[in-house]
Image 1 (tube, rainbow, N blue to C red):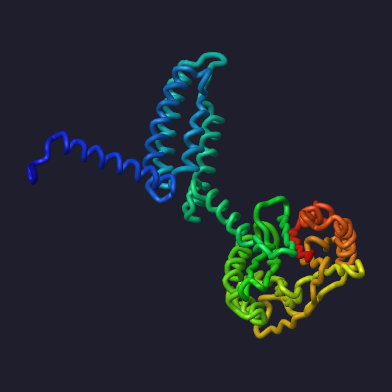
Image 2 (image 1 turned 135 degrees about the vertical axis):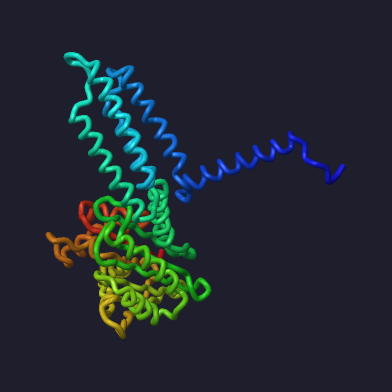
Length: 379
């Protein structure tokens, strides 16, 4: 039978399905931060009279200041307009509690005192500030933590070094200032020229920790797009132009760009105001500074970056690092680099597997600055 009218049972099933879909979509949108906050508002509005009744019935177990609980939750969950509705309901509940408890209280009985009102009002004011801040930023608290976690993981993924062919070892360690999760130091790397060339860029953005993290994230994405898309000699000029176009108040950065031939071990190193690298020669057992010439990124247009050339032979090690690792207010650059090479000498005989992190711990564990160290070894 086709084309017939739907039965009441079929219509009820369709209506029930639409209702379930709408509720589920509203819940998903809410927890994603895209939907209305009416679900949270309704739940909190029901909580307020429940707390008021419990306070009146069992004042020894539920004190009048318990009303701050839905107010705190509202500050985290609701929009400012919805939060005002919750505050109105809380004020009515507090007035009702005062009328009943103060009339019945005798001696040391539970009362609604002016101090109680001040505490609830102060918490409500703070909750409103939090709600207004979230509304202005446009990131609900439910998504704020997830977004920061996602940004941190993106920085980590972009900082991963590609696998190298047999006979090569690479590792990188990064430690942000103050034990934070975000850093102004970052690395981008790629294998180019059909996989025969390793290009690595280590950058130190002005500032440190969270202050520099947003700029570091933006630059790491831009530098990652430029790397491998341009000839090596054009990378730092393009990065410099990009930084100038941002017109930041603290728009400068230091950077070192390594271009390593994985077949021969020959390399070119370009520097934009960055610290010199250190190369260990297996033949002599000595560390040699590798310093290229170039101005800071983001200072002036038309900057030139002249490379320095070298070769990594079997047993050689190349270290690139940021200034937070070797330079502090109490220690100059020369002393810091001497300390770094002294600690690195301990790994010469055993190999540098896992050495990057341990070197940061040994040389600059308690330094309140971003620290990054890149090691490339040829076995």
